[in-house]
Length: 608
Ligand code: ADP
Ligand code: ZN
Image (cartoon, rainbow, N blue to C red; front, side):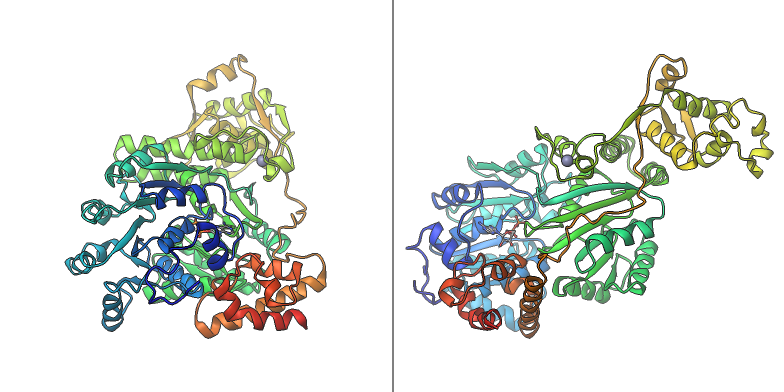
């Protein structure tokens, strides 16, 4: 194989399989990759919906290396395209990006190289693509294919809408017949057809992968002492890992990040209120460092393709299932075991309702937002396998139980709670449907508080009829009644619970109620999803040595460590312990270029 970038079609004689092995160092294609590549090589337009970490990039990168000409990859995210180009350069592929982060001189050099065909894969932002300057440049360049990454940005309904995406279509269709590939990890059915239509894909081959992320373990806990719960979760499973913690408010982000630092973690805040430079620096550090935690509002996420994020924790409810899926999707892109952990409480539900209610959306949109919140709550309160509920939400069937979620770990115990529900609902009624859950629980528990005295609620027939249960149990009952529609939150006054149509049947004894017992999170057993990939301490030590070498090399080159080798590659090196370069080439993620660059150094450590 000739590997000079001057040789314009340097891989045209290769099959996708040989490119996969020699360049990427992978032995086998994942499920639809090969077929997608074949379709592109045959000149077809393609639509690819694949979950995060599914392996979308290879689908256009391999055809780009085989077809004559330059591939244009449109991507909205500067950090993402930079990472891709760094990674491709490590593989010895002639690749560049054009975006606003480059100097005038750098742009000049790249612009000179493009028409000569010296660049096989060129990443551009949509803004740049649409400039006359760029279009002129392209008119004299042979183009092999056009890939539109994050293609859902063309959808006006999504939260990632980019107006420039709408203008891509005209331009890409001026390029003489090249395959167009639209790729996304987030598209519900309605956006799929919208993307295909707006990009005017011609008779596209459509590839829809399952949304399932089998390596992600889902767990939902009830908030009690959330800091302690988080701390237990981290010490049990993630003492040495990188992860993302989402909170709703900037203040909380700062608070949690500070507190984690005091506890000895390497944690950084990220939210829209931070100075631009600080925010960028924190994001960069997250990408480049190991064992680092970012505490963020949802402003953080797009463009985070760090593959070894081992956990995503939510300390507040996300807005919808879509958000939850997207945010937790940042865990475990490398396919290794990862955790999605969410803590929530009754007051979160009330707060989220209030946020929707007080927002400026029109009524129709608000209803939609309420429905989305309800779907998320149903997921949180589910008695069934979380993965099943999650995938069902995206219209996917998941026939068995996953054995990789908290419900599968500890099946939910339900009990007949008809009497308790009646007590709770009639307490709401007797107190005049004017109070929040705290006061109602005090009445049921027979607690004399100032408010109870003020309203003479110790005289109510429901006073002290619930002394058999504790505060946690009663709150759980109220929460479940709320989520299941037997109670509603007054929309004008904060946190006030009221009866609904459905409550009547329960009060009249016509409808039995089944509720679930809460698991009390007294002792947390580690799930064993630690970054300590090996039980054997010798192997773990070797892994640490390799990791150290990787970090040093990455530091020298100022790239994230995973661009040098993925965790998976290091794990295989430890497991297989190759003793020669010839043996090393069989390791996942080691192709010709990386073998040449790093083989000897890593071999040295392995031999020691
Ligand atoms: P996506 O863009 O779909 O989120 P990527 O293209 O970044 O995913 O791929 C996710 C990870 O999977 C990367 O680390 C990539 O190198 C790896 N990967 C992709 N295809 C394969 C394959 N056939 N064999 C092994 N690893 C793969
Ligand atoms: Zn499950």
